[in-house]
Length: 224
Image (cartoon, rainbow, N blue to C red; front, top):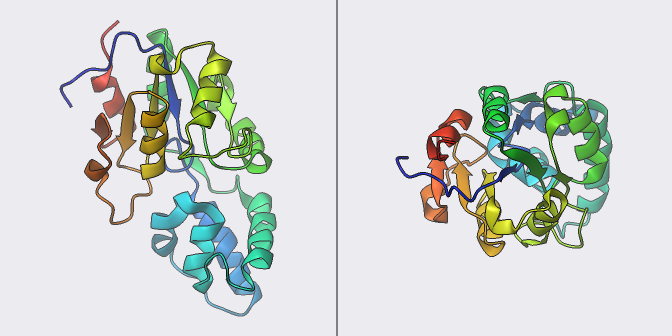
């Protein structure tokens, strides 16, 4: 977009799954491992990808048609977590353009961090497995604070760790709850419509900016 982000911006915070990394192959793979253990055929990754941002809930919905509240849901969710933990770095990778984007942000003197609803159990080992993410100035997970997105507390926590007022941070995510959380925290928001959107139109979220690829974010930033 032609508009630029405020010159008061000092950091960029990102959602993880669907924004920085494509974890759908391992999330869907864990669900397919569960199907295979039950003698069921694998489902194509394309079936899982739109709901990858919903984690276990989304994967179990696709794999078994189950939702929270079903008698078997809790047990299957724990099995999913165990299977995903084993393979979560097998096929997960950063999206094209992320490495160049993070390098460009740092070259402009902007710090960056991660705010995800993924639990620490998975987030911290996954982040450590990706050398590119060693430069993250803050990593806030879904269970780091008492609340998860769309509550703004995880974003407030990230801002505290950066030593910045929330309004000096930009939040980028591929889910409506990311935009809701960012707005509630008083942060400029960017919708990443290259992520796990399914049939959703991100323009309906009313983010401050919408980008079609990671590097599009640079077009929103004020030149330093």
